[in-house]
Length: 532
Image (cartoon, rainbow, N blue to C red):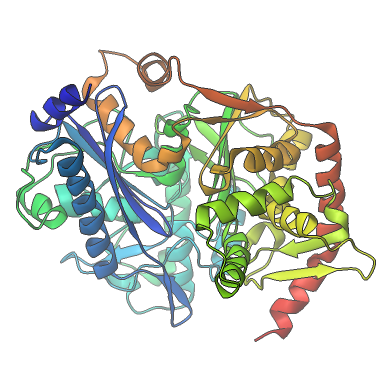
């Protein structure tokens, strides 16, 4: 088997996927059947500059180059061969945000990431104008807020895109975007698989009085579906990704996608009545719908699968960072006490404690808000832990509180789908850091969703694997073969899946915890107002 993999790589038959997440850039090399061959990663952090969450362009390229180099080194270590050619490749990144460029291709203002919550006025006005929920993090909300703010750069904009769209552009020369990522820039009409024409016209009419020398449809990247040709890696692009000059140009590149779309591909959740939950720095649930919702909800985003199917997306800005911070505190205690325990083992130990806690967390409550959270109408965040004098402060309850807190805001949004819209699910799959300790992650998620939740053995591969799959689909699919059929037959047939059914005690406990959580939101709001 190792010899076959070696030959595949040496012959240029492997597919590369790179995803730029919020805290990690990961590169995964796979064969045509989706088997991971090698990987590499690079850790990075967004920075708060002048009140804006951002990454510099240098952060982007040094991170991509490092992740690629580590993947190539992994190949050399495992197989003794050098990556020179690829059968296909794809790039993915955190969705939304704002990267605006002038006519010479120069970035006009620092990259504004999805994490920023300074576009409330724009989001509210656009939602009312379009009668379609426009979240604060969407690209068009950032553009319109810049217009409302009178920012000097706006008349100079000739192209704006997402992080994945930017990287794809620089590596291929093509200003395109996969439909899933595009649906986080501007609303999509799934009947034509393109931006909604009437809404584009409405936006242009709204800003006509400003006299800008552009129409919004001229600024947006071209929309492509999974499997469509999105260009090839240029010589300049190859050198950008691999400064050693070893990687050859010419590899076909699939449409760039957002982390939501790659999550759907990585969990085989692209068909109607399927869904997935990605739980890492942020947390979001993606539910592929059978029909449109009866009305729009400000708590629910309407996006699409990589093939254009409508998807209800419940997105929360905050998930694991607060848990990570508390585990870091226990890490410091362990070090101070001279205890030799690895960080992964420490996570497993503390998550196991959470499973022993009271179902309702014993009256403890926490808010994991490192940043603002639109679903609960908070423009900023203050991580907060609280308890009543008679609450049961135990380590199991403490850890369970933080575990449930990481999903509480998500549950508020999902309840709208299940209770108001009567959305039906055949399966819900989890992936991301929260599910690395499977039992704890599944227990919390089944309690929140009150439906069976599964984790696949490949879930840890995440979005980088998902975009690599989309690259392979583009090249390997048969004539007329849908993405759903290709994933079912080529990638996930025989896939090992662990499924947990909800336990009523845990479901009831989460409901009780959420009642306390909702009541305490006033304290969180007071903390935002008072702690400066």
